Length: 442
Image 1 (cartoon, rainbow, N blue to C red):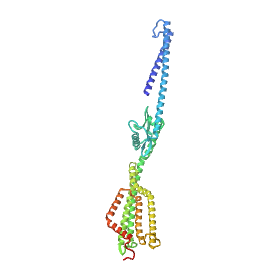
Image 2 (cartoon, rainbow, N blue to C red):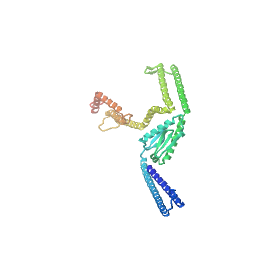
Image 3 (tube, helix red, strand yellow):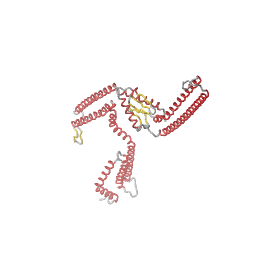
Image 4 (cartoon, helix red, strand yellow):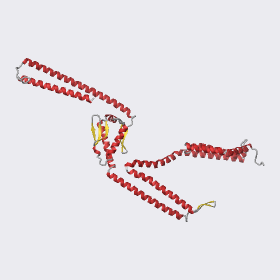
């Protein structure tokens, strides 16, 4: 479109120069004629009639050239108006299409040193928005980590179709009209805004990655190492003091542990056990110190900061999972407690009724008093079995395959090894409820 405009402009310029030249030649010829000279500058006899006809023809030609120039200018203005109208219609259509896509299209963030500077929405030169965002972020980070960084050296290089953010000869970001449409501003305004974003971030990175900052990080590193060394020394000193305290208590306050006359642990064994437990506590404490010190060392330097967060994740994620699991399990725990107390008081009620029947204070037709306690034991077993069946889904890990497999295995062993027991139980039930023997029989 711009090439067509340039061609029309050159054509208009050429015609204008031609018309101006023709008019100048005509005026010069008229002056020479009225001065008595010829057009060629040679002395010839003046011919009034022919010269006047020639002058009239030249004037007509000049008028026609002016008329053609005016018509051509009018056509050019109409073409410009049509082109501007077409461009505005096309721009409005693109703007409407982008507005409809904006709520569904997610921009790709340009992340530099952990911060999001801006977003990119369009492709350019075969690169997707994600690839453009990654390359732009990497280029800005590479510039920002230089010791001789000059943030204010970021410049804008404009052309007809693109605006480049430059740092020296390195292109940091290329912006097109499509990028400007997505942001709802002109390309020049968008380029200036992105330039300011990059300059601000480069100032921050210069302060973060400067030489003095690096010296401070090294000092912090040495300080952490020295602090951890003295912390280990303090832990070992405290352990030695504790060990000496335990050995002194062996002869004074530590007494032997006996069960029914059998001396399970004498004072020396108890002292050795306490020393062993204190040693385990010392190593656990030193391990926890290392778990927090090593990530702290890594987090001092930006190059290892990601590794530090990863190590902290190894420590924090299991702890957080345990606490979250406990908190999430509280409603199920309350359900288990409610079921337990409900079955417990129900068993007490059945026991009370059984004792009343056995004592003869409560009479039930067809139910003998000597059936009361055996029936209570059967009912208690069934109630507890029902309670276990109700509690089972609320137990931790009950939905795992390992827990279910162990439950099936235990049930299989009980069923295979309890055939004699089941036979005796059935025989006892028959003897109890068929009443072949009564109280007082011999």
